[in-house]
Length: 396
Image (cartoon, rainbow, N blue to C red; front, side, top):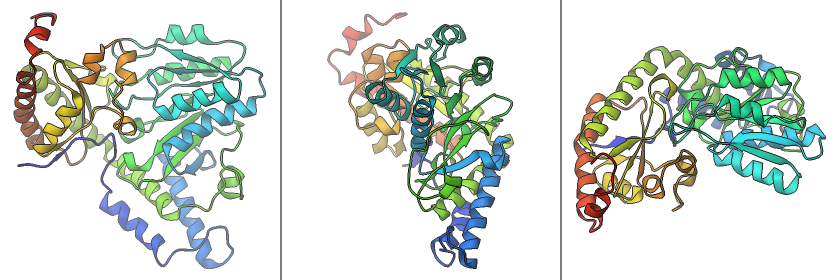
């Protein structure tokens, strides 16, 4: 039995070269960068180098990069920091119905405790935001727009450049959660008119517990973490030197590999999509196709099969996959992303996300395409209601 990992959107294995760069900062180079002696100076230099690596990958200035504990922290900082700094009574935030919970739950917090109002933009059947809906949502109290660069469940890429342009024309800060996109796409924050962007190291073969936050120079927002003067006085707490070194090393290596890795993953993704739709009756692809989808993402719905049961069956065959966001995998509720895209409860409950990465090979895709149809067929055959359901499936 093969072992096939297809949950790279949840997390990635550490790049051995990234780990090698991190190791000295766990042992002999342990100095606190806030101190003044030479051991501490080496730690400060390591942070400075990592900041340069992240800035270079994004076409940003080093002064615009801040290190956090995660992409979730960066999302919280963006929303809370802007609303709290705005001073606008009833400050208005625009976001979407398919954001990661790090944004959605923060928006709910702002509504409850900061008297903010929030507009949740709808999406189309492929998970795409309408620019016309965005234009119509602006008010004279709008202080922030937050739209995910690419969805973590279905991989749909939003028109970020156009959204950034609309926000810049109206003088409204634009934040994007790029936790998934930054690991798969070449992003130029200046060209796209992005004001704030959240990233996470463990999505790009770096360490868990480390994120990065781009904040355009001159943009004012309140601090999220209060205490010492770290991160230029913007984010208190003794720095995670090893994690920050890992973040810089990971994004630099990711950027260097993109010209070869993106087309390779795109080809594997498309072969997997075509194979599943051909071999599994009544399978449905969720999300966009082609260039408007992340190169490593696939997401399907299988009528008559529970996603959680399907995961267990695949796991018994050595295949690791997901039903959606890793942060919600313990929930039995249907995906809020799929529901916002207009899927039925049954379609949402029967969803399967398979995301590819550096370790994914042609042979592994072949194995999945040989295994998945049998697993789905077996589960459907065990359902006494499958024939009844099938009779109502369109196109039978």
